[in-house]
Length: 413
Image (cartoon, rainbow, N blue to C red):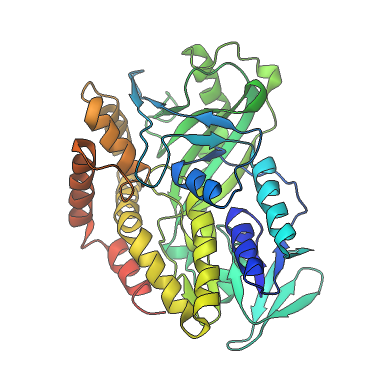
């Protein structure tokens, strides 16, 4: 078996397959450790899985409550609340360290480390030939595509359509500063009144802060240039507003950007002997851009589908996607398309989320909803409010093109 891509999704898939006794090649275009553009937060569901697998890394920063800041400077706090299947906290750790940790765990379980860039996939049934840059190739009876938003596996297997996909672009710097709480900033400036995304500042080890901007671009990747242009003014605004205390511009790392594929849009997650996981499957939360927890869970789900029932693996994995993620991702991807078509709604969105009503059960409910924690939330007023919001969004988007396309993609494997 071959797992193409050794980020969290690929490493967890390879580790799970190797633990079952399978012979697994874990292929990545770069040797580890390697850096990746990301906010570096592993959310509560991801932390719960790491704890279950006894893979919680050393050296991570524990993150609890999170602040929201609106365009006018209003601040509200989303409290970190434990659920029935997840803790009330997250972890922050540079991706260079976190990914290397999971990669090593897969190798220790028996996966074979192969450095090479996947450029093609041949064969429609039985063994598939995986072509690597430089002319090398290898045969695999199963292929798991974990090679990110621009997945070569997904394209070669005709499981992804870039024209119908929802792409995002994120860019960040590491800076030295003091940060009281992790913060999401619905930021705007005179050059761009409504950014179709948000900024963030998250604490990391040794007094380092991960500060960045993420924007939704739909299928128009050229629109990502706005994030790169506005990154430094955004960081300056964090310092000016007091969010980053003691910020030294000379301490900044080089900017690093990367693509996201969100909301399962334009994706068929599996067919035959090819399964897509993580970003390759579009499993990134359209509301806030988190994908690490979804990546790890999908990697394990794909591997278990293959081991448990090879003849029905694609169908069973597709059913897992449908049952666990399609409702939320489909409805929120439809909302994201609305924001792209009407950018002014982003300013209204930020103002609403930082209004005086964002406290108590309302704040808890929003935290459950937008962090995709509703299924494991503790019963109570906040969960009831979150369920009502989820139901309203699903109903209001049920007839959109985004939802119709997703239903077709997940109906058959």
